[in-house]
Length: 216
Length: 213
Image 1 (cartoon, rainbow over the protein chains, first blue to last red):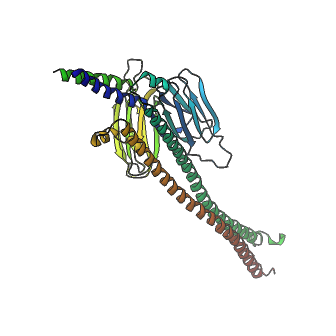
Image 2 (image 1 turned 120 degrees about the horizontal axis):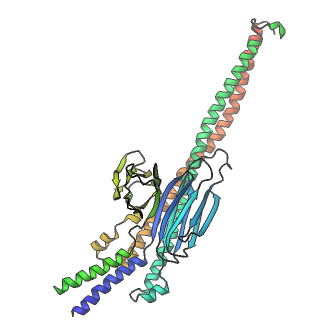
Image 3 (image 1 turned 90 degrees about the horizontal axis):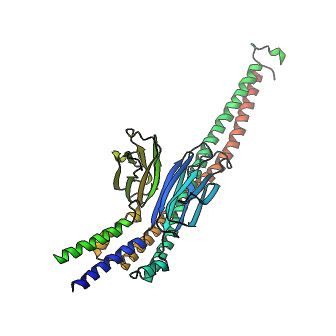
């Protein structure tokens, strides 16, 4: 009697534990200011996990349109190999299958001296494979389906975060345009009035008695 | 007595299994030996934020300590702690804006090396306490997972509505700027003509006064 009770309670704990472990996935979404090189580390639990994410350079105070070449993005595996490398971009999405488990390094490199703010989002997703199913008899095929559903929803969330970051950048540009329109046009008016006043004053001076007006 | 032993043993087994999951489920940052490193996120109001940070112990025997600070977009200090190796903090956002979490190495630490901090920053649906929901509604297993998925879908829907609202705001600003560009350019032409007309009138009067014309 006690044996079966033991088996039942341990079964429940095993199921819960396996569910917890198989559905583990981490999500991080943050902004960081990149002066030269900024690296963020994320731990990938299982080999074969899909690591996906995106990043957008938000604080882009460019004066002319093609001024800043963008930032470089590199992903290094725990063994030291470069898994992913994107150069000179102002924002992109990435996705790769982790070749090994361990600590992955995501680095942003800013080739210019002006600090940039990068908003990034990294997601490590794990779907239990057939091997996991065979290893643990308490794992149902339904858990695989639920994990796949979860990953699909996470990809939608990732896309939304990317859109949100892009929207922030667009809003920044819009605000800058609005300010430029107001300040530059008011400045232009004042400059126009000032220059024409200076012109009048100069011509008046040319004809004044103190400067020999006979010359003119 | 036997039942207690069984319960304890199952608890022990489950704890062992749970401890296999690394305690650092977030990203790692490296703090420079001097200076502050800050991470920020733009969060709407009325969103639950859970922060958890742990200093990753070095292979050396020195025990580095860090200071941590979280500020709201209006500059209020939401959390401040110095000389610590770990901590956690939860708050609900009052304002929409950029929330900043800053970390620095304690000046008393003389290691001179970079320190790794594991930061777990969860907002919104990721910060929801599913254990308490499971206990309150007595659901577990597949039903709990489906409930989590439902929560994620609702969060996606909310995010979509938020993005839609933002796009509408930006469209208003864009259209206003567009109208302003047109008006200001025409006004600039008008000012140009007006100012040069004033010039001509003034100079004509001046020359007439000087009896040159």
